[in-house]
Length: 191
Length: 191
DNA sequence: TCATTGATTTCAGTTTGTGCAATCAACGTC
DNA sequence: GACGTTGATTGCACAAACTGAAATCAATGA
Image 1: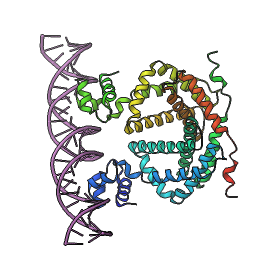
Image 2 (image 1 turned 30 degrees about the vertical axis):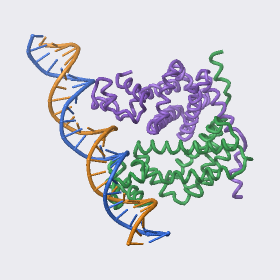
Image 3 (image 1 turned 60 degrees about the vertical axis):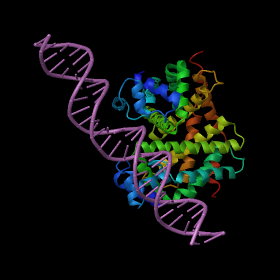
């Protein structure tokens, strides 16, 4: 991790995101404000370096596992593999990062954007497997929903199970919720 | 719609979001930059006035329809009712607004945040019906996923069906995707 | 030694966004 | 008609985020 990222991480944890200035981060890293903006498009971006790595990892896993699995299962399996590789051992760091993000709306926005980009990348991989674009996007979104549900739980103090298991649980919950009941009723009010 | 919103809408459509300055918007509206920031927390917010209305409408519909329906069905029914009331007749405006947002990452971020807030509001309503927090959030998220899928399609040129129908379709698609196949496999790789 | 390449810096400038005090425009009341 | 209240608008001064362009510095290798 670069000096700038480390400095930013420290300062955000110490005094919050809004109260720390880019000049301050750069000073602590022994660099200049202009240099900061050479490396990161904006102040938020300094917290989101791992995102693209995670994205590459997931897509790699997804194209790796051959086309025998139903799409949503394939996505969740890829998420499990990527989580094992990148999240499981650094629970503490991931958690502190989420706390920083949770404390600031601007950072939450950026986090949502990164998730959306990841969703699109997964959808692209699914299209590469022959899924039609609409189903691909919906499946990718459902997978990311499973991921978010699992990670939310994983970062809670009471929770001690591995992320892999929580992903399975979340998938099961989604299936249960989706399966509940008929969908004929949606037409009936008019008839 | 206020003068500022109208002016902003015009200018964003004419020259894009980034190229138009707050000073410019205010000038066209016959007002001052300072006044703009009295009404809107930031430059983006001027495009998101209808959001809170939509949120109130959905939550109202959701608590209105009694507890007999399965949760996800109740959410989608509420989305249908709110869409009928607020979206259906202004397809053109909604569509142009989405085009503006689609052309700018910052605006997409804000849109995602608004969707997240709406998700939370729906989840709160579901908790009020007795759902446990985790299921409530997952159900609300699934509902919003249906909504986004339907609206994406609704704003495409080729599409002419009412949003209500597309919501039913999207719910059906999600159910199909979720239903596909076993979820036992997730444990098998280790054993 | 010298040229190239890439990272860093300096500088000057625009834009966003905020705090504060002043002003303006109704509007009802005496 | 004078007067005070209330809310919206404005002017001003300023912090902080971000950008473009040119200069400098530090390897690195021919």
